Length: 322
Image (cartoon, rainbow, N blue to C red; front, side, top):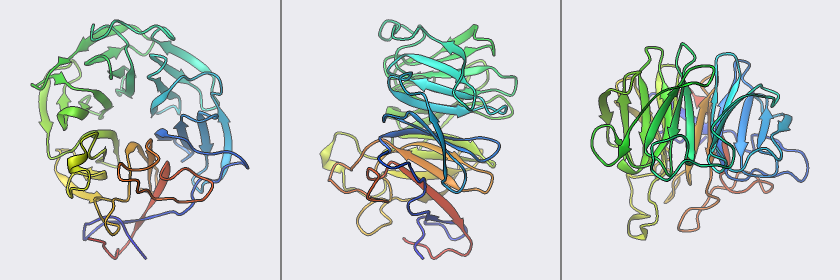
């Protein structure tokens, strides 16, 4: 049995072929994954069927969102199982029911704010909820801001600006919030996660990350998808920079890493863009690139694009691949 995690206490194996699609369907660029209170798995992708829903065992349940989304990017599942779907092509966040009914829309569909204006939104990327139901929006590719909204959609505050200093951002790519109201922001091209209080006051940062992209807080740990090298071909085959999935404790200390050059001469991942964890501790990883820069990829099933979605199952007493 092959496991993917270089840690003596925790192991995971790939659930080969998980997520059985109807005939003729394909995953395409899985931007985000979410899990609800019943362990239903929501796969937010850029194919013909934007939201594909499975049960924990990978059985297809339904799809929705056809014709609604422009470019799926972020997904957050609230405590009431409502889904917050971030569309960076449409510059909106939609709060939706588990069966796809729109309850609330933040932003104006198809009308971005001016580039780097700080006004919401210009290619927003992800959302998070506080315990009180406040909505935090990472914004994103053409802004350098975090926006805080009330549960009914009123803008309460915004913070951030372009740069590399504390409280500045270079692609605000993902965001999550803990029970204490602390905000964690994946500041992707600054290679860090920044930490803020609920009002945007800077509280610290986590380093030793390479292009953190996916970010999920579950079961008392953070799961951080790191993209690895970008367009710079000179370091595309270097070890120690991903693509990979890092597991960190609540203080940002590294617990373990999955997939960083663990399968022969390649990573287990190509571009971990979204991550979610179910009640059993299984990890779902969505990826957007069909192959790596060197043309390598992991193909789970002949009917799927290479590395669009993987389920990683916890393994007791793992045989570690180093």
